[in-house]
Image 1 (cartoon, helix red, strand yellow):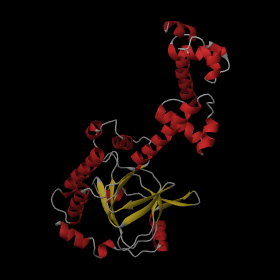
Image 2 (tube, one colour; image 1 turned 120 degrees about the vertical axis):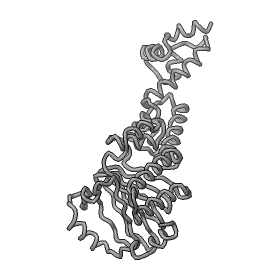
Image 3 (cartoon, rainbow, N blue to C red; image 1 turned 60 degrees about the horizontal axis):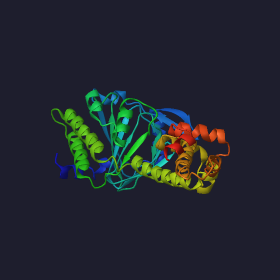
Image 4 (cartoon, rainbow, N blue to C red; image 1 turned 90 degrees about the vertical axis):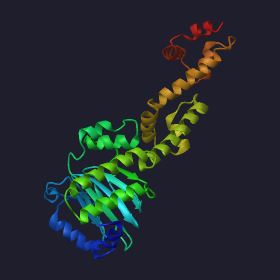
Length: 328
């Protein structure tokens, strides 16, 4: 099968569903286990039999399809938007995938797909457990967002983000990988399953190599970095007050979220950042030998002189007087 033949196939009746929301829900009720989830239901997909000794399952998310109810897989799922767009709910997030985009969902992540139009077509690639060899995992760099996600996903860690959305719209290698996978899937020959596995590995490797700065995580990281920059600048201007609640009220931030964000991205607490700024200012003020140390302490927002001495020595390794004497 060549690409032209594939394109014809993907525009044929094979790619259309015409299933209503109600029919899909009834179908799921008959086929899958249903459990309560929030104010609705969650279906648990079991695909053990469908792998048939393969490492993957390839399926279409068809055109003109009703809403797919909230469900989970016990496997990693890759969804590629072949044409149009797909709107999904992933846990509590609403995610819109455009043509050429990819989303990778971790195991056991609740998600649903909104109804599709005639132009909307998705490709699902479901990966069996232990799909990725240890050799591949060990070769992934540990200092990139994308590879960190993949490493944590493959190692069954539960503390990471549960999905990764790649903005791959104009990447032809991604599209060609998907085309080759589909050609082997719809027109199988000798070793087609092995060839598909190789294309999947090429796809994953390419995503890790090229798209570490073009995912939902990198966009969120950029927003978090902007927020952290605002916080650092605020501390620089208001170190004398050093009040987290006042700062959060000023920006309209949630104190609990802000505290966690500062700790995660700065590696220090809000109090530690404020204290560092105070000590830096104190060092500058100690250059003025005419200014009493107790006034310097008050100037940087510390009214207790004993506390000031203790903090300064912990920060610099010297008492304020010893530091001043060194400047003489």
